[in-house]
Length: 61
Image (cartoon, rainbow, N blue to C red; front, side, top):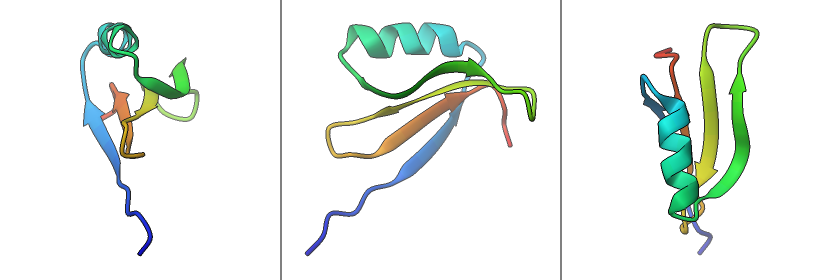
């Protein structure tokens, strides 16, 4: 049986603080903190030990 993973989008007012804390805790960074140009958002993505991707962003969708 193959492993199943998820991608989650979490809205936060302060992605910089969340990124700093995630790095302190040893998170695996998938993409660094960036300011998106197509829409107003600042975001980054990390993966957890199970391979799930977590995106933390100011954009609510």
